[in-house]
Image: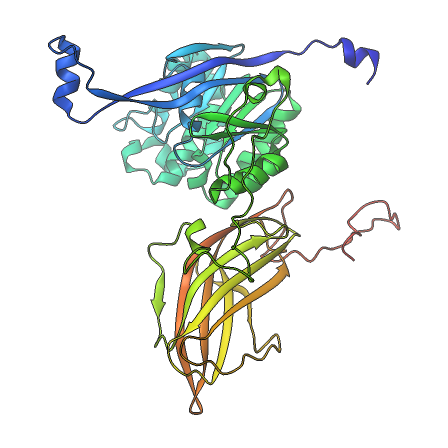
Length: 457
């Protein structure tokens, strides 16, 4: 590090110190009313810690992602930073003009037209009518919702709504942009436009705080990531490390207490202690039927059918280190595992899996027959554990896994058990591509071999 870099003063845009947010939960509404009126001095509420002694510093010009499961405190944190909520304890210091896109429709009057809401939001942010006039054309152009801009926003689709809200948020020249999951309702082309704007903001030295369940976006655009879990900040560091730890949290394999070192950013971000995959969650051991699948949220709308002469009784997804997870870095190895138990004689069973996109299009898959792995005849009570391991080169995004056990009985094809769209899996990528599958191309310009990607060729 040069002397200039050593002497460069850090500019803090957002400083959060020992922030705690506590909500009071009442079993009955009348208890809340009686306490407010001072008629009852007995405590009739439970305290819920949405955030617990959180410490975070965000430097000017950084793009910081915040990840965590639902209920971990992400949205509460952003609302505290923007002043929508006040902390129960601790302090928050913000330096710079904030523009926030927290909830779909926040700050909009549903009976006003799009144009009227632009002026309303501008006034709420502190802009004069003349200043909004100067930005109006850019806002309308970015939103790109046509004549709907002059219609009441109550007639908008969710996609049009978020287009207008984001167009307003980014065109009022903020120094700090805060976005909470709002882009998930926009179409792919609008999301691409928004992310290009993120890149433009980064080049201009603006600060971006970004909450998203899109782990590929966190990996691709963020300089740092913060992982929240049940109101605690359990990790702060590189996006890759945060995502790896988040994968453990998702399958209940995070078992650490937050140490004092972890709570103090100045002392360095810590990981907490991590529970390893519980013993028995492997092909050579078992914790009982369903031990693997209990680690995954199952699709309540899955399609299940079959004769069940043989039944899929357990299943799992594993990363290349053997951890149970449904989130995978593009280019890494992953394993589909399932256990099949026979209830009757099955002569020629075939075990299979397929991966579909969210529109239901089958992208890829295989089975034991295609892989030339013969499965012996099964009698009642017999069990097999089958694993398919492969490299995942799909485009970053969300996919659905389907499992199947079919075969031939008395010369005819039979479906013994199928589970369609049983669990979801996420592919995390730091680069975009065209289509579903990455060709891992190597690109050379004018004979220069220094560019492109050669590692996989």
